[in-house]
Length: 306
Image (cartoon, rainbow, N blue to C red):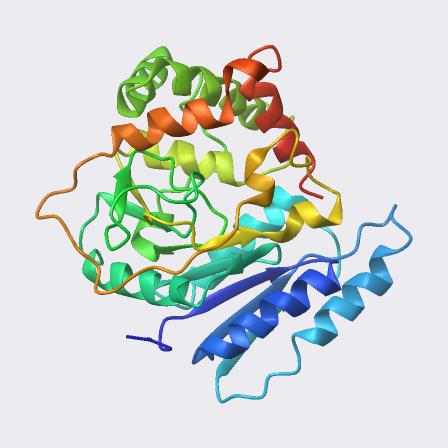
């Protein structure tokens, strides 16, 4: 079941404790091809230089046979450019692979889940992203993936070079009404479109230093499909450092990772899981918190990535 031949990109920065936990998880999987990219220290943060050096030292201690490539930036590019450029670099070398940031701790079955779906949908141009996240924790048959427009998530994920080629970091067509209509129809939910609208505006206007909103946008404008597991396979440990919102603001801060059951059950077609999206919206925006909008809480999440 385990396929160690799938390349893995590990994105690190200045969090040695998180990096050690992720590196230990990767060591258990022992990928044959490991790519490690690190953003450089911020010039205005005195502790960054030492923390970045300590973090990079952790990932030099590879004790299994693998082909290693590194991209260690001497200067800080920021979240948006550091991550997107690292993924560009990754796909300069490989056709498909798994991507993990330093705050995304996967269950061991995450790697098998991604590997199987990367192979299955390798030549299906509509499928653009495979996520390890299920923000409800569990939903549906534990053997079955779910299929969505855009909502796949990037806390542990996988994709193909042919899909990443469609990534539009500048979101060039976003201001056009026709583009917004297309995206609204692709999402299929006015509530979710309203949520995405504010985030897309912020990303397009460069008021958010992020790369992932542009990825969701790229999936939507290409009529793409993202895949989620029926159980959450990745725990986001970034909340534990206090740089993100706490669990009162965001229930996914305490969401654990579970194990996927195999063999996976694949449908003959790709049915969109509308029930998941409806339930997720309600979970993230319950009546007791309607005064504090989902949009504002999600924007805060992106703003506090570092």
